[in-house]
Image (cartoon, rainbow, N blue to C red; front, side, top):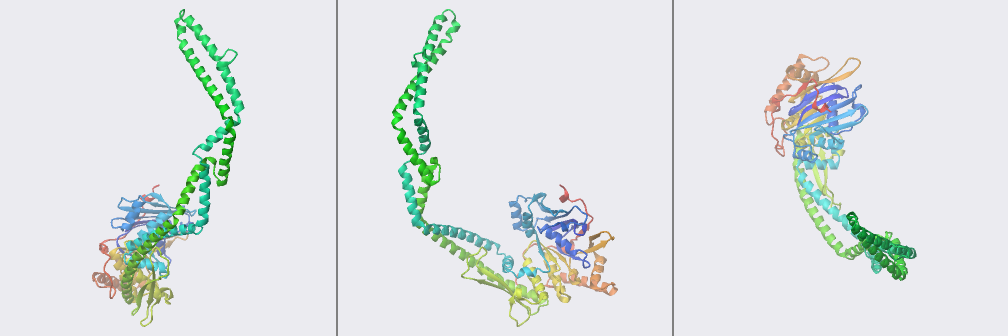
Length: 600
């Protein structure tokens, strides 16, 4: 429920702050006073499009902030808030800021969020109906969604959607496998050849790198042998004094001198160890030279194998070191293709089972939709009798196209049909000739379907084009909605305004330099005066005031009578929401105060 609304520098509103309560709240005022601006602000708050034109002339930015009480919020909203890490509190603060440059920012509980998230929250929190709302009712998808919402079929629709996703995934996998199977023979032959070619090479992991190193060594064998022999001569076998000989003589000299100075004795072990290392290095050089002589016959073999590896790597467009892994991948593809027939048969069986499961759930949903359609038809037909369309009839046709592909929403086509004249066959909503009749029918559908909603409902002059007794019935319908929840309605009709639990007057004032819109809470004589203005002409007469007083008394009496204002026959009971007594609550229009939503 919307409990607090603050609007600053929006259109011609400089600052308005409202405390709202359950029930039906009407906004009235002269044409052009700015009543619909409040609806526009709520539309923006619910994620509507924003532009620089919404900012009041001379202001830097427009701000709209609202507080929603979550005590009786629908489970859908609470779950969504938890998913977005915004839950846990008893209130939700929604804020939208639009700069004079057209850029906008959105906030939920003080946390900056993308406008898309604001739009998702707004679709749950606020349900706005304009005077041309009937246009959306002509779309089959909108009609199906209204029917599902009326019958509380969201769980069944969700199950069908899950079954559809499972079927679609299996279908895509089957199509992919069938596509592979079409050129299976040619691909099998190619894979067999490639796998055999790689297997014949018998290349081991890391062998390509080892071959490259060995080939480089063999290509420089002469230089390596000469260098190794020179190092060996310098260390051990040279005609000149070798490193080993010099170290040995140094050891002998120090041993003779150690008796004279014990400090020199400590150096003897170091030199002896150096002599050992020199001998070991010499032996390794001898073995290295012998290996080079032995490997001289292998150079051609290594070059031949390395050439074969590099040629095969170029052929398969991989690096030589990647050939073993590539061979493993091709072997896996070959095995998968060889068992493709078996896999495809299994997949087709799974696909058929998934399709049967989908159809079973879709048929169950169809049965529920048909039953709901009959109840909805009786409900709206009964409301039509009280809205100036006596003898009119409404039908909700649910049909299936057996040849149609499975869809996420099921197999049903929903069409709303109506006739406003007895004896005339029902026609599609889009073909109804009278705009006034279509507007009233739209209101009947909205009221019937909105009765299941827990959102704040906003009606912007949906009662346009009607009057008299029909207008009074419209007011009663709106009031009955307000008893079960919260309704805001912009109206020009006194018959509707007198049914409200709370009354706000919108006025526009100008000082010749700027224009401002203000909202005033009406009580007692002020409300009677406003109703008299709506009833009368230029001059408000005593008779108009008396009439306004009688209308308020009659509305109060009607509200106290349970059967008053209800359709002749109703097809279902209350939505089960805890009823409140809006007559004990009051809307308050206060002077603006610095809101928490403005804090940065």
